[in-house]
Image 1 (cartoon, one colour):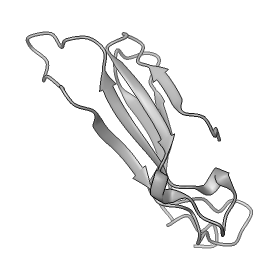
Image 2 (cartoon, helix red, strand yellow; image 1 turned 90 degrees about the vertical axis):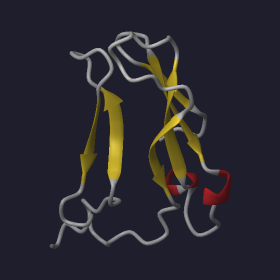
Image 3 (cartoon, helix red, strand yellow; image 1 turned 180 degrees about the vertical axis):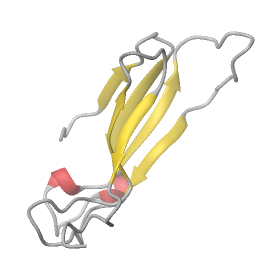
Length: 106
């Protein structure tokens, strides 16, 4: 994980994926890698007439501080994680989600 903001342009250059720590997501109970985070899409170019226009940042994901994580080697947070651009599509995101609630024992 990164302590600095995350910036990743889409493969076609029309959007910027911006990730940052949430100011209210800091916690004394966990290390910085488990602080709350936000991911937003920022438009870089005007959309084509056939595409929907996005004028403001679009929130893709918001995660609180991970203060309660199941115990286990493969435990992970619920919700979206590892959000990345699909390299074979112009502006398509992909991510992973735990189907077991993040608990490897279930």
